[in-house]
Amino acid sequence: MKIAIVRPLYDQTELEFQEPCGAQAICGFLAGNGYDCRVFDRRIGATANDIERYEPDCVGFSVMTQDDVPDALRLLLSLKTRAGIFLQEDYL
Image (cartoon, rainbow, N blue to C red):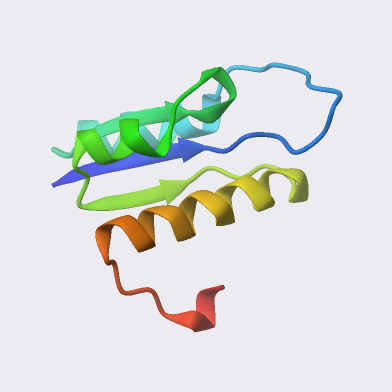
């Protein structure tokens, strides 16, 4: 199973860059348990096209603050629309 872990863009003008340690830790755990996993850091230019080219079976988001949520939702809906993924509205 291929899993994409996405670190969304921070929706503020003041950006303090930090390594995506949470996303990397999740990916490391998954890889250690036999999953093919990759981190897509939107803060350094990863796009929806990059994620789609990877062809993941599952996409997870590493969201740290409420300022990460708008980009995560935009990307989630974009991927849903492009891939025709069914998404339960209860989670939106």
